Image (cartoon, rainbow, N blue to C red):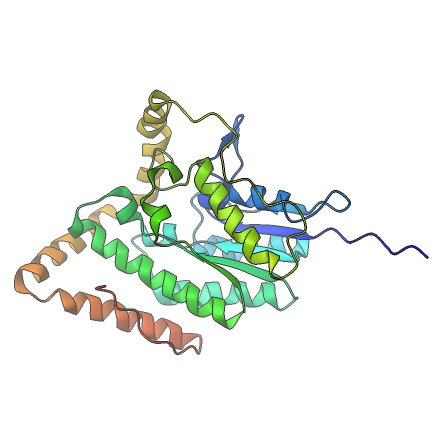
Amino acid sequence: MPSAPPRALRFAALGDSLTEGVGDRVGEGWRGWAALLAAGLGDRSAPAEFRNFAVSGALTEDVADRQAPEALAFRPDIASVLVGVNDTLRRTFDIEELTRRLDSVFDRLTARGTVLLTACLPDPGTMLGLPLPLARPLARRQRAVNAVVHALSARYDAVHLHASDGAWVLDRSMWSADRLHPGERGHRMIALRFHELLGAYGLARGQAPGAEPTQPPPTRAASLLWLATAGTGWVARRCTDLLPQLTRLAGSEVRHWARGTSERLDRSAEHALSAALAAVSLEVPLVRMGE
C-alpha cells in the first residue's frame, strides 16, 4: 500500500514591518524574509502553507491581542514572533508589560506543539546613527527586550536567531535606505539562517533561499526619494509620542555623564528587567546595560 504523501507544513509569521517585508520590494508590494523562508520549508509534493499576519508598526500588544488569535486559528506547525523594536520607540514603553505579553504569546503557540522562531534585534539608535545621548536610552530598551526574548526563547525551546550584532549589522549592503529595515540581501540572510536552524529539526524540506539578491537594487535616487517621503514618514509616525520623552532622557544622559554617574541609569534599567523577568517566574543573570 503506498504511503500517504507528506502533510504540508503550516508557517505563520507574526510581528511588525520587519516580518511584513519592508525593505524587500517585489513589484508593488513587500516580500521579506518570512516569505523567502516559507518557500524553502516544503517541497514540490507538499509546499508549505504560509500566512503572514505581521503588520507594519505593530507592538507586542498588537501581536498578543490580534495577531496571535488569528495565527492560532490557522493551526501552524511553525510560527515566528519577531516584535519589540516599535515598543522601544514609544513613550509608553514598559518592559514588564512587554514581557508578560510575549510570555503569553509564546505559551499559547507552543501549547499546541508549534515550533517557535524568535530573534534578538539591533537597537534603532545604533542603526540610525543617533548621537550618544539619544542612542543610549534606546539601546538600553532594546537590550532589555533582547534579554527578555533570550530568556523566553530558552523557556519555550524556541529556534532562536542572534541578529542583534555582528558583521551583518555593520554591513550596509544588508540594509535598506532607511537604515532600520533589511534590504533584499538582509532579508535573504535572515531567511537563510532560519532555514539552516530549522534543518536540524527536519522542518526545512525544500531548497534553502539563495543569499544573493535577484531583484535589481534600487537606484540611489530612488532610495533617497523613498527615505525623504515614505521612509521619513514611517519613522515620524513611530516616534511622535516618544520625541518629548527622548529629549528628556537625552538630557538626563548628559547630566549623569557630566557627573560621572551614568552607571545609575544602567543599574535602574537592569533592576526593571529583573522585575519583569520575575513577573513571569524567570530568574536569569542581569544584562549589563552599560556594555
